[in-house]
Length: 72
Image (cartoon, rainbow, N blue to C red):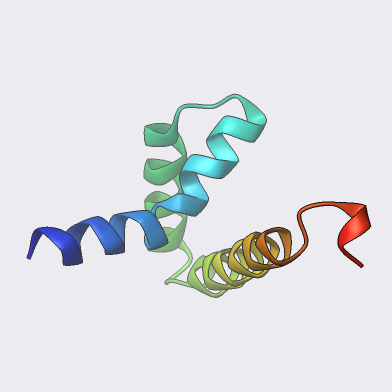
């Protein structure tokens, strides 16, 4: 159960952490504001959240595939 919890936290909350670090906000405030916005707009930001997680994973895979310019 611990490995499942760690995996879900890394995958689902990774976007909020990355946005918080990039923009200088606390991760907690980003998560809370996402929950509040999702509640008041009947869950429509969830689509944007999944798109952001997908894009973040694509960028991570692309960076791992080619680490330098000379790897072409």
